Image (cartoon, rainbow, N blue to C red):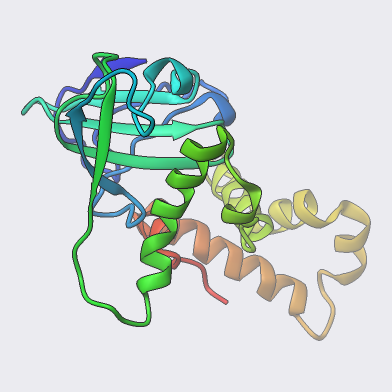
Length: 216
């Protein structure tokens, strides 16, 4: 699928996605300056018989490509749960012709080298096997906390009180027993979630793509 973008937006992605679309169906193209896992490639024309060609038909069900006002393509390969972001520095993925993807890396060898190579390993695994290899896409350890933060953000927008939020998260029975407990641990937990939800809504969500963003 290909689309044309209309310029930069003030958030973390430059191409709008339909907010009513279910998360597994959405294809969000995060800005490469924020999504540090973005691969830079040159898509070079190649003989259709080349063993290492990028076969558009093979990957079409996962491929979403948008074009910026300068004509550069930004793509995501996703099955709805795992994703590989690609910026095309030269050539095209959208036109459907066979290409050889030459990846472009820069930087120095250091403590973060393995992490920086992970997106390339993911792409290589997909191209080799036709699958998003689970071993290369570990479960996000913060997922339950992130879901709670999102629920709290929605509740705050709807005008809920902190006690209302606590009841939704932990149940009315527990709140009726523990909300006024001397330890204050439950209220403190809700306050932390409220603080985090407000920070995320104010732009802190941008840090999540870099592996940061939540209070511990």
